[in-house]
Amino acid sequence: MASEAENRAAFDVQAGYCAAMAAPVTARVCVAVGQALDRTSATGRRVLDWPGEPVADAVVLRLVGGLHALHRAGVDADLSRVFEGAVTDAAAVAVALGRVVRDHDAALLPWLDGPPQTNEPGRSGALMLGLIALAQRHGPKIELLEIGSSAGLNLLIDRYRFDLGGTPYGPADSPVTIRPAWTGPPAPSVPLDIVSVRGCDINPIDATDPAVAARLAAYVWPDTPERLARVRTAIAMLGARGPDRRRAPEASRSRCARAPVARACRARHRPRAAPRPPGRSHQSG
Image 1 (tube, rainbow, N blue to C red):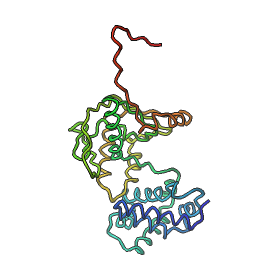
Image 2 (image 1 turned 180 degrees about the vertical axis):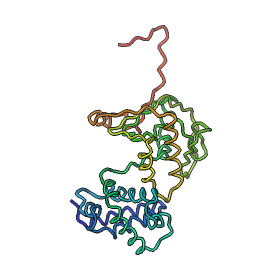
Image 3 (image 1 turned 90 degrees about the vertical axis):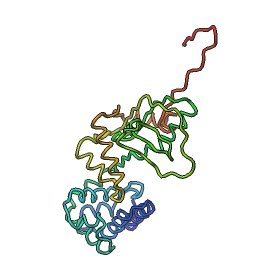
Image 4 (image 1 turned 60 degrees about the vertical axis):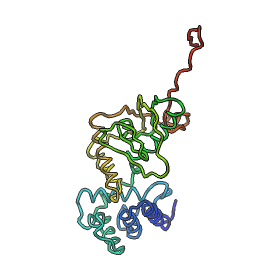
């Protein structure tokens, strides 16, 4: 069990990550909440007495997600001014957030029950690069299997448009374009055909449920409106036509995670068939 000081320090650690990723508002919130938490609220007591490892358990992101959800719901004007960047003085932010935690204790406490759901379509950019490498080596036809697919936003990879250093992939009319920050030469242009996409999860979530969609949006940092726009559009795409996604029991998921398919970018390629020797028929067995 971490000490109170270690649990508070986790907020500074997360703030450092946020600052490094150009998210100053979220960094400011992390620092202020870590300073403002006390034992007058159930939320404060639970965080300060966290029984696990606070950084690994993403405790800070759980609580910040809850605060962001309250801001998005418009329930507290002072909180909204903090998240909108209108209040930047560290002491003023800490005072405001300390009061918000006390006043909205019952609403915030459940956000500590589970890890953040950080579904981000932009992560498909890295996955697409892996698929390109597989296509170069084994041929264009790819069957994609994702283990732990959650809301299934990355299972829409065959419907997203990608700009990989100037090299396009995916349908030109896609409502979502993923354009990762890029340095160096562009990605190679190779034939790529994603023939099927399937996913499984121990606890898949339905992002087309408005409450679930609101929760996903709450975990998107307010400093990144383009990410929020992507998430919203991807959820709309799920509503129009969702991917093949199934619930998987823990034992099955564990076996899959140890299989080669999971270690190879969660993808399984379909290699081109070897040519048959002349004059011989193909036989199995």
